[in-house]
Length: 93
Image (cartoon, rainbow, N blue to C red; front, side, top):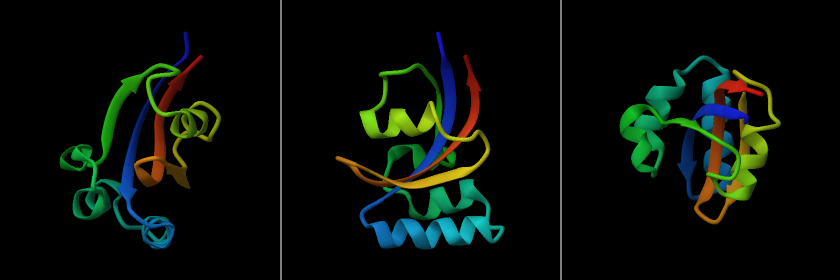
């Protein structure tokens, strides 16, 4: 069964998400940005969500994690919780 590990940043607006993505792509550290800006409890750990399988996250999040490129900042991804930037750190088939 497929497994993935990811970290994310959760914010309230698409605009905030896009701004943070630009900062990370310009060289800011993902974990530091997550700690400073993410509203998810995972922010304490730099946005790290650990390892999980398909169907363990909400559909929109799950789709991106199991289809997007590993090591790339993906998003904004809108879910019922807000807007996410997602970085898949590992994925196995």
